[in-house]
Amino acid sequence: MSTSFSTRRVCPTWWAIHSHRARRCRRSSRWSTTERPSRRRAHCGLREPPAGIFGARRRQGRRALPRGRGNLAERVYLDWNATAPLRPEARVAMAEAMDVVGNPSSVHAEGRAARALVERARAQVAAALGALSADIVFTSGATEAAALALAGRGLAGSGVEHDAVKAWAEPSLAVDGQGRVAVAEPGRATLQLANSETGVVQELPEGLAVSDLTQGFGKVPFAFDWSGVEAGFVSAHKIGGPKGVGALVLKRGTDLPAQIRGGGQEMGRRSGTENIVGIAGFGAAAEAAARDLAAGVWDRVAELRNILEISLDVCEKEIILVGDSAPRLPNTTCLAVPGWKGETQVMQMDLAGFAISAGSACSSGKARSSGVLEAMGYAPDVARGAIRVSLGPGVTEDEVRRFAGTWRARLEKFRARAA
Image (tube, rainbow, N blue to C red; front, side, top):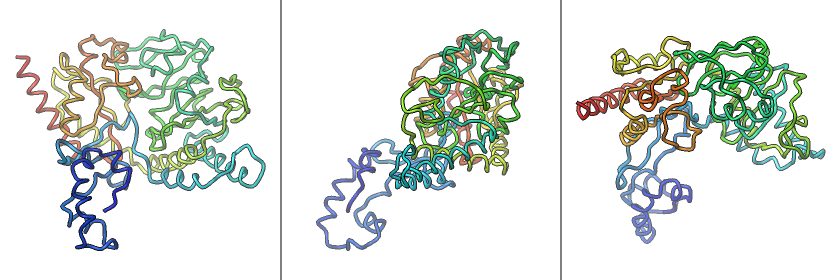
């Protein structure tokens, strides 16, 4: 029996347990090499190898992973704001782009084919953003795009912004208890479209200098051309595209100096040979995300979020639902229980088979209180007890209810210990 390298690498526990059976079966003549792999596994006493979360759309939101010695448990992925499973459309586009050998800057036929691929993706992203009259500059991700838009400009920001924004903007804007930000001078400020931790959606003022569109892109209706924003940035992997690619969207005529100089790619704003495989996946994911949004897919996700919050019984005085009176993303629930640390909840849910988070996934796994909640005026013990549950189109009502039941059971144990 032959087992791919990827199985050994991704699932070492499964491989270590069952590889001796595979070696034994290779010496057996009871089955032919032309038999179906499933029959061979049945003959050898092997289970099916674990499936990834990046399979068919009906499987999105779930992943089978090993627990203990070879026992597979069905996991539920509820961390879509951290990253979304790769869309089938993006996977196909990336596979096709791998066969394109040319450099987009070359003038021969191969180079022109690569350039056509990049420009097609640029048009797809622009259409999804409602930015047909804007410039789309491809980057390595939203963090690089944020630096390109913000570095050296001295813009004002708020304490609820992503760290990639706070690195360049002074957090001086006022934030209320619902996470809403007051902007007095839009032309000298940056403001996110939606918060990754709380899901709170902001009303972007006319003439805003820069906006982090990353979390809202593909989840809520938005048209850059009509927003009055001068510059914004997005990331591919938040909408089911590949990791390591993003884009800066600029109002045409906006002058921003290049951070990376060299070959003058991307209209002279970002030098370096384009990542055509990632860009192709980004374009396909953006087109699919816009289609899902128009079809009302996220309306169903909002219904599941409401079911989740009812099942969690967030009306209890002890449970704090963050941003409950403000407009929120259709998929995001941020709640806190004072005294019950967020990272403890994340670990307990992980062991129970559920993937959630205690804040932004872009903080390198640091266990710390939520700066977003502190900026909203919450006490440190509340900020330390916050978790985020973010749903996606692949999550089912049964999974939502199972998570709620598991979390409530852990909450009762916490209360019993604290009593």
